[in-house]
Length: 399
Image (tube, rainbow, N blue to C red; front, top):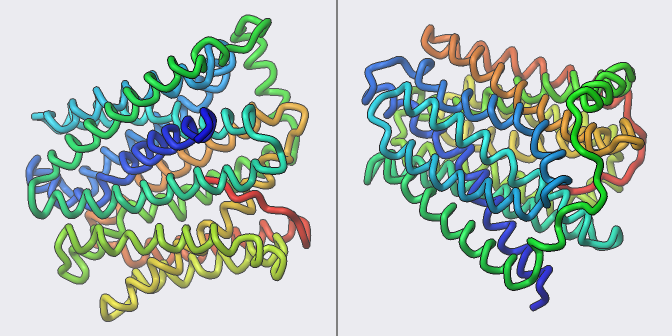
């Protein structure tokens, strides 16, 4: 096994933990509301805080990775996640839990984006799509594991045990990464030689130059709306399963695995579906599947239909989002790194906004109508995207 392949495996482990930590609290909302004597909507602050910090810090890690080395930053971010995950597991007040989750989001933001950037540096273009797909498997699997284990631990050992287990996994990943990076010399070679010193003024000027481009503004607006409608509602699917169908937290977390399975199926068949449907067809089909999935989750009379809806929404989200990712990589080729970083930032800021909106509705019994409105919004969004993309294109599979 080569040094690069070993590094990819260890980086993928860190990415797995990052996505698991992002979604681990989804099945815990009802349990958190009971322990801290708050509403389920208020408990969702642990998800929104993570998403806001994750989105904003995207803008910091890009320049930092270029200055001191991507592997160095990934190791530091992974170690910080271990510390903050331990703090969340021990939090005695809800305020401390939310603050620690925000700190976790801020740290986790430095793992997956810089892992993708590292692949771009180290892997030849001809093998890059396949390599990114392997990273995507790690991230989607992490999301599935986080949702499933979060529910299982909440039901059996208590929600704190899930966060404690994550702390151990993060620590192991950081230690293994540091050991391999030292042995392979990666810590000595990652920093960019001769890179210009970071200047806030030049960074802001470059950002404003991008925002003056109509295509950039359109893509960023669309992904923010997608984040609010698709990701924002996703956080409350376990609560819907518990309150609407009487499932346990463990079973609700298990249902959410179906969303990730949908993502894995898309990653396997993406090339064939792109050839058959084109980017326009992928956008419309993906949005339609999300809409049908959300409507099933909102109004299904039996849990089986809701489970099928969760699965369909998973496939649909990755169809639509992968199409938007391709647009993000091409919306400003002269500043691709900064543009993609802004894309990731707006996705998670949109998610946090969606979580806050749905949180307001869930405490008033409006979850099903809000899911229905989100379904309509996603469908319209898919139609809009389909009109702006190419009829045929090469969609890179990525997380």
